[in-house]
Image (spheres, rainbow, N blue to C red):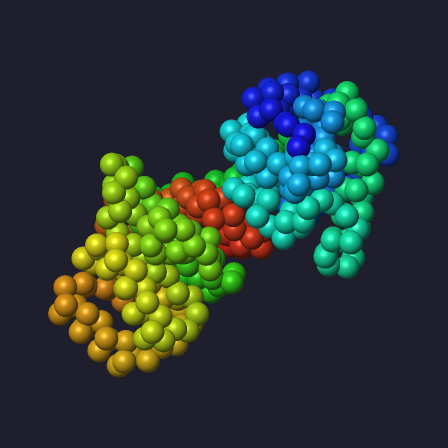
Length: 357
């Protein structure tokens, strides 16, 4: 197996950023196209391949897994996880896609890049073919480093666009400390579910404003809460010592009593004596059945507060001494970044803020 020294690779990647310089040829243009494209996993694969080749000329840069270790195969996943991912988070957040484990995605789970790999027809297939084309033509460490430096120019641009996406900018300049303006905004924004992303963002920001800096509120990506053993609710709250003190379930679609019981079972397993279950505007559920179940569970020692998003918002806002729409929207965008919210969700957050003013 071709070895790629992790420390050496990290130094090369850092140096490429410092020496970033755009190349103007067909290979560089294809690299730019892939890195500006919509397929996140292929972005990571491309930069990882360039880095591997720049570090060790003997590697087969088309390799995705070490396999039998022959023919220049190398451990691409380890290189990406230990070098590329930390580099992105520390140096250029969002430049590749803000993924923690990109090589767990299907396009990276083949032995190597090949036109025989299963991929959706159209743009994805074209991107795969372009990847193979450029990587196959880069045969030396010197060439790989040259194109890695060129790639850095694009990644810097991606990073700047990423930061801009999560910033309010100058469109929202009103700083009036009127709680009603924030509530007006919440009334408007919660008309849009955005595949369940809006309500958890609103709750996370209100909870953070209410609890203050001594607590850390962590929302999880929609439909992925509980995917880690450390995740309890859709939103988890920790104190200054990192101890879980609260968990919140947020539903912006109709639910059953089984959904409520499942959420509470997770809360109880985490040794929480109380919890919040917040539901969106247009949610439908069997009130008699759900409240009966909550009453029984409450008598067993766990109190779960079932409350609508608007009633929850009114209660939290009433406890806030000062809050501006600008600060509130800024918080929504910061939490959007944490859950890697969809572009459409971010667009709605900004658009409604601009409409209010």
